[in-house]
Amino acid sequence: MPGRNLAALIDIDRLLSDEERAIRDTVADFLSDHVRPNIADWYENAVSPKELAPELGKLGLLGMHLEGYGCAGTSAVAYGLACQELEAVDSGLRSFVSVQGSLSMFSIHHYGSEEQKQEWLPQLAAGDAIGAFGLTEADHGSDPAGMSTRAARDGSDWVLNGSKMWITNGSVADVVTVWARTEAGITGFLVPKGTPGFTARDVPRKLSLRASTTSELAFDNVRLPASAQLPEARGLRAPLGCLSEARFGIIFGAMGAARDSLLATLDYADTRVQFDRPIAGFQLTQEKFADMTLEVVKGMLLALHLGRIKDAGELRPEQVSLGKLNNVREAIKIARTCRTILGGAGITLDYSPMRHANNLESVLTYEGTSEVHTLVIGQALTGLSAYR
Image (tube, rainbow, N blue to C red; front, side, top):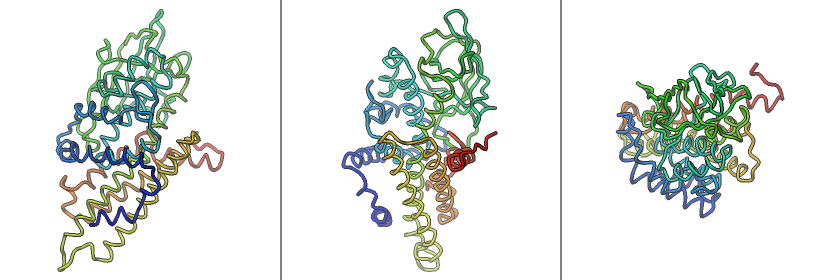
């Protein structure tokens, strides 16, 4: 009953098309059957199941907002709704789909040669191959322009040296889009798994995104043919354009984690009895629920608004920053507040809010920290950059 009450109060369905609702519900049903029963164990045991990739490919989720090459070619809103359902289960699952489609595949789709597209995109869309995106370095996170990884010409080849850090899918990827400094500026390269000199190791002892693979990549005199270069990627604008795509999915996804936290806690509060009555009937608990629901509704409406703008081809990077900053910040507050209602039970994996809160700690800082997005919005408002 509490879940139905929340859905009726939000009533977002009236703003969606039949196709958008069908895509969302198909994703939710699949996850309910195949992922939800396992996600707590995967999180506890730090398992990122590669075998899900072909299943997600069959659903059309991988690169679903891209056109051609086996991609579904859906709307931005449909993609966002899928991300919402994925992150309602776990941020790590949404991260996998985001990195595969909005970073790896998007970089090839927009900046690759026709040969690169033909070779990789159908495999990645089907989940027969896994992709990763190597931009961040240990010493260059918010300022990727300072990257140390370099690629130099050697005859017709390129020789790549350097390292990347915090790379989702890194050690399981069949191909990694790697960004490096060259004499001509920042350039992208496709580095297949098994290339001599390329190694990857997983980041150990994580407290967040445990059901997701996070890796450090190293490149020691990695020799690449000229055909490995992404020919249309010129300068830092190319990787930043990919990041903007991935951030868009987070705007929807974060509200999935918030909604799931709220639903789990509503159900608990309806049955948890203290002082001879369900705790859902106490005023302070109801105030928490009301405040959290307000933020879920506002966040969902903001995501949908930005999705419609994106489908019109008019979404600007600062608007993406607005959505990511608000929705992730509010989602983590909601997950934490839900944990307080759950009490001691909330620190276990029997309930999702604390797992969501831990995951959202990563989402808050990856693909642009909250501080950076704040400054992006500030610059859009004032016309003045506060970065330097």
